[in-house]
Image 1 (tube, helix red, strand yellow):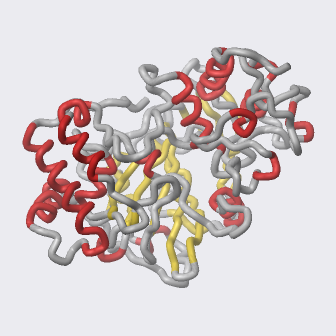
Image 2 (tube, rainbow, N blue to C red; image 1 turned 180 degrees about the horizontal axis):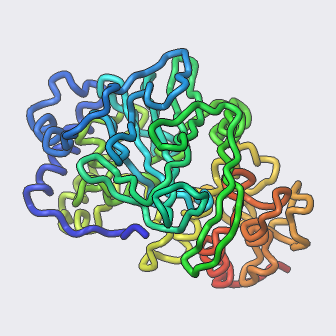
Image 3 (cartoon, rainbow, N blue to C red; image 1 turned 180 degrees about the vertical axis):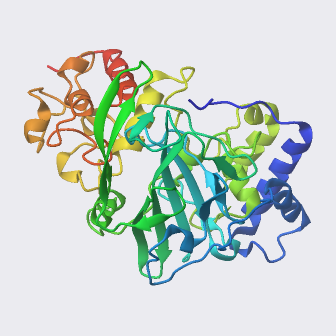
Length: 428
């Protein structure tokens, strides 16, 4: 599991971080035109060069959907490693979506280095031409592919390369921002892991998972088809427009896993990948507060200006914050006031409370998904809570989330159980 807090950065890096972030906020959309030597120097300092680049440079396909992932030029599997192209930025989330214990490598690329515009609550507004990728992979007991996979930790990047020994690439999902909006495209990796092929109809891949306790569990890994991708990424049931889910302030505000000693959002600001406009205020009082307590802010790699979700694995964080972050990451793309599950009346975004977030709320349209339980959450009684039942079951007609998992996430279920068990009160 990822460690929630990194070591404090040295004084030179602290000064670079604060100076670069300040200039990035002031310059807004004018990034790249008179931004000042400090920002350029910080960006050069932060971005490491790749010693071996894939042959295809990052390419925005405005209309056609390439048959092979390599034609996008974002990542390439060569010489026993998965490599990131120049200008492609890796990132991760404080609490990610669970997907049958698959590990993930996320990247973002914007054309000509254009920045995304900050939004406090929703996904950032990325420019036309942006390409986001998410590659799903598993550790394997053998280098030869047998269908056997294991639980494990995400493999880090070294020189912008991720070694592929004892590792199986399964799929890479591409989100591309075109003039008409976002498109979602699933690519499935071929047998020799040399490239991935577009599979708009999705795929089902039989596997056997070995859990950390040694238990072996056969399951069918689902690569979603294009419509199923849209089903999750259309987070507003009215507009039905596809949107990124992960690149939100509260998910990205964490210690960077790819630039040691930096907060990930401050890294994006310094790099010019993120900016502010008039509708997304950049509160100077928050920046001043950080400056006054620089050591504390940087030691925890937290930027208190931005919303922040907890790392669900961080046992030093409050139990409620961890559980709410988990439900947000796994459920709120549907369970929000405007989402595809708005008819359920259940809101699992961070700001929801009371019956809206399930406290003593009777089901509306759950059918057999209730498991015979009376309320979504019964304080103090996880065994009577529908939320726990739907997380535990693998019945396709009852489990939640509906897509993206075939096995039970034991650790996630235990976290939500513990959270509900610790609640005071009950349902009259």
